[in-house]
Amino acid sequence: MQTGRVRQEEISEVSALMCRNFLEVNIRDYPRAMMEELAGSHTPEKVAEIAKNGHMYVVRSEEGRILGTGTICMMEGSETDSYIMSVSVLPEYQGKGIGRRIMEALEQDELFRSTRRTELHASITAHQFYEALGYHYMKGKESPNELGLYDMEKKREEL
Image (cartoon, rainbow, N blue to C red; front, side, top):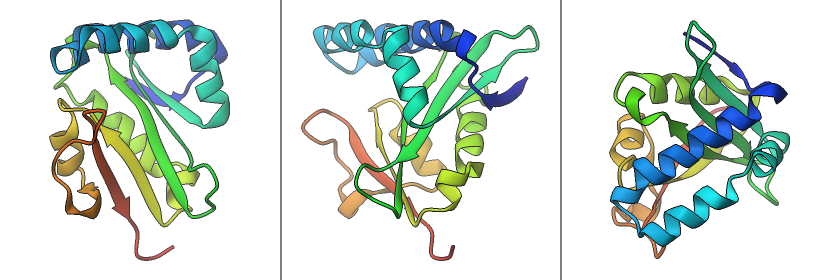
């Protein structure tokens, strides 16, 4: 496996991976209509826009298949905070270290390393995964927000 920045020709495959994740994994915890809307909105054009506005990483199999993805970007209006979004792993590869590899790549990225705080909004399925990676519940609130997501962050004391 190899981890690196997404290539333009991989955008459609990343879009399909994200949609599968919404419709096969997140649908277990969230309303079907909500997941279908998210899947419908994550077109290749939308994913290309996400990649353009941040640093999108993918984990590729030896054969070049995209197994997982994640993006880090600067928090809008902030010079000191970053935001992790769109972390997705093919359903059949979950629990095999792909998500951890994605997070390692994101945390090595210059946007992560140059900011004081990184925020993410974790799904019901994923919040314990992020907690194990050192993310904490914002304001100590260990329950989901109005969208059913856990607001989490990781702070760095030194830069």
